[in-house]
Length: 116
Image (cartoon, rainbow, N blue to C red; front, top):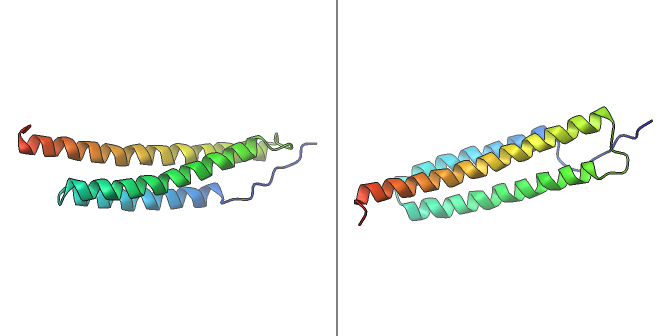
């Protein structure tokens, strides 16, 4: 009989909602600031990226903790691991989306200035 692993951390749904909230507010803020000044948009994007990076590291740590537990192997453990992996993928895609917003804003500013 396999033992069920207990992970001392946030549940995957709570972690996903936290990450989504940070990503949506950050994306709206960066997009709004791109019209004001690209420099401030970059600062806000950096702060959002650092927050998302900390959530990414926390999620990856939970995945490693779960998969390296001595009693890992039950169906519930595998489902929990897959749920955490989906959260990790979501946080990573949010980080890439914020970086893409800044890159597109930089390109649009170059187009507006006429490649000085």
